[in-house]
Length: 165
Image (tube, rainbow, N blue to C red; front, top):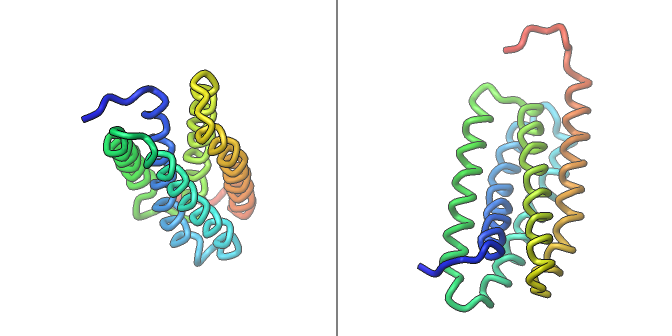
């Protein structure tokens, strides 16, 4: 197995987060369909952009001779960790608000990871990674804003005095 640099490891992590985001948005669509169907298009767009992000990461990874498998393994490990968090947080009692709260945490983490990748790359100077970060960071920031607004909308509709189930 090839040794990865910190930059290559972080590239694998952001790809894995994009992979995990696809599963998370699918799960939250299922939670939102009944009680917050107007929010489903936001989730579908996020899912599509996560797919695009994964493909763009893979395009760069394909150019890294001798590192492709190791970076893909890093992405898969990150995706598995995300799946475990999703399963733990969104159990059988989860509702749309729970789903969007999970996404708010996940999107905040993605923004952070992308900014770390950008900062690491500022010293390395990989043009393709710089372009990818320039494309992805505004999308991730929008995702965080969108899910945060959805959380607030759903929370405003909740009866704060109701007994939690």
